[in-house]
Length: 420
Image (cartoon, rainbow, N blue to C red; front, side):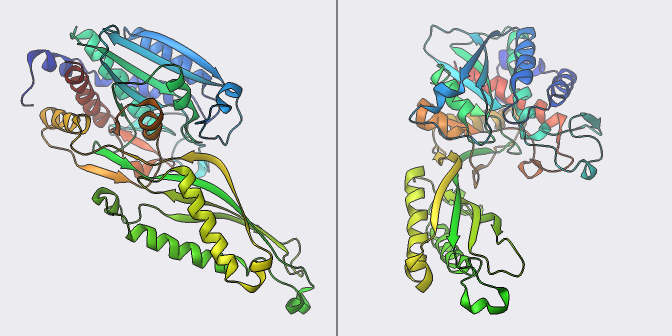
């Protein structure tokens, strides 16, 4: 470790890996599926209090948030969005640094693909296994460990540090919007999503859509008398493929180009027909459309509709029976912070000083809560956290406990410097 002050060294030394393992196991044991985060938020509030933080919980009514003009949509029904925040430092200074993360997880899937039950955390060879261990309870616990280290080392902060845990990231980010509306924004922020301890400064967005295509039914023995809705999906698919190629080739931001396919278009579900011997007269396809850096969700929606409309105009049947497009579920905008922004570079220098290596600046092809803090909270935000993002949502999801500790050490020093 280089360039660390005695106070920073004391904070680094106060990070307790054994306590990290216990905290992470406790929160992974809560099956906090999206829409059911109340219990795990109670757990987080308790652990923040034990760590010496001043804790507040706000349950924002779902009905109130749904009327917000910036509401990002949801896919899971709920009554409220429980938000928990723990504070240390000087709240009167006007300086604020936030470490944030979501506590909701996706389902465990087929448990036969797991070597142990997904919600029974298991530690082996320095790895903690369990649903949500990587995405992203490890990052949440890294933030908790950093804040505890600052308390125990009696670090002097020139502002207010906040650990913020939110629900509902997996289905759109309404939980983060609830936190912003409750006042948890401003200053700078790090969201501890799994990034392999690299710094993500640019994230694509995405919208989900439902495409409906009408055909004309007929007996399969006389299929030429009908129009198959399945066959009429192909011209739309070809248009979407061409559009995907064009918009990805046009990307100029290096970190996004390096992902290979920053803005994928995907059809994830298709249903059609009622009988094997009948030409299908209706097809419903559900898919995902990327939102480019610098593009609003509304602009992405308009682009998607234009592609489908042009495909229909070029087809004899679809010209008179155009496909319909409905935007459904969460709406993830894109977002970015410059690599040379004081937040990005300050965090990178801190990671170098604590871990001995300057992290890379990356772009990612998926959405996250950073765009809400940036767009609606006026808070520059990057992603930086422990864990391999490729393990998210996968069987035997896991994280290395030492990586969680390493992240906590970096965050503790970063908070001291950001608030100096």
